[in-house]
Image 1 (cartoon, rainbow, N blue to C red):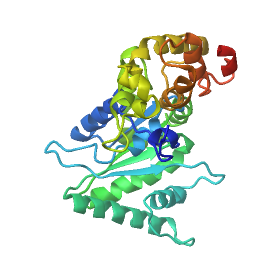
Image 2: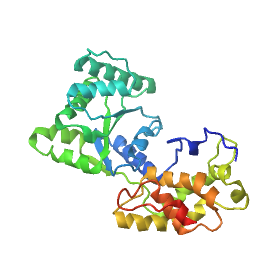
Image 3: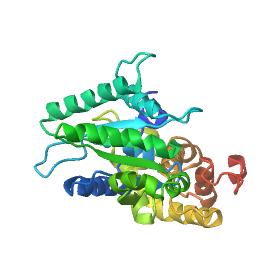
Image 4: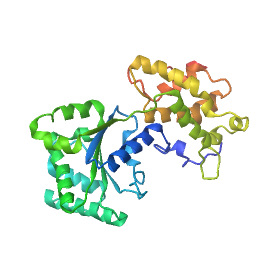
Length: 316
C-alpha cells in the first residue's frame, strides 16, 4: 500500500468525525444562547470527547438570524497557587495575547476583555461565548474572575455566555462546595443550566461513525479512508459499517463488565483506526472473528485495568 504518511488515520488526533453527541451539544448551547442564558455547565466521563467538542464549537453557534457567534476557548490548568489573576492570565494565553510576567490581574482582565469586544465588533454583534474547559481544576473563589468578565461587559452593554466543561465526578464535587449563600451570585449567573455529554451510546450511533470511514476521502478526491487501506475489500463491495452489529455487541460485553455508560470518542475512534489500518489488512476482512474485534477494542485501553487484552498472536 502506498499511503501518504500524512493520512488522517496515521496522525494522532487526525480524524475529525461528526457524532450525535456533538450535534446535541450544539443544539443545547444554541438554545441557551437564544434564551439569553448567562452561563451553564456540561459534564461527562473522562476521555469521551468533551475537549475535542469544546474546541470544535467555532462557527457552530449562531443567532436566530444565522450570524455566527464568536466562540472563545480556554482550558484551566492545575496550579499549586490558584488565584483569580491566574484565570485572567490563562484567558490571555489561550487567545495568544501577548502578556508580560509583571502584568497584574486588572491589566490581564482588560486585555482579554478588549479581545472579546474586538471579536464582537468584527462579527457585528454584542455577544460572544466563552468555553472554559477542564473547569473542575478551579477552586470556588476563582469563579469571581468570570463574574468580573460578565460585569465589565455588561457595563459596556455587551454580554458573554460562559460555558464550563469538565469531568463529571470532579466537577460535581466542586459544585457541591458552592452550595452556600456565599456563592449564590455565582450559582445564579453560571449554574442554572446543565447538560451531560456522552460518547457513543448505541449501535445506531456507532454505525453512523463507521459510515464516515466508508465515505470520507483523503485527499479530497482520493480514495475513501477504508479504500486507502483495504482497496480489494472496498472494490468487492465490503464496507466497515457492516461490522457495526458485531463490534457493538463486543463493546457492550466489555462495557457491562467495566460499568461504562458510553463509548468514549477517543476509544471508539482508536478502535476503528486500528481495525482499518492494521488488523483487517493483516488478518483479513471477509470473516472477521469476535476475538479480533474484542482485541481492537481492548488495544485502546478502554477497559483500563479491569480487562486484560489477549495477544493478537493468540487470535491466529
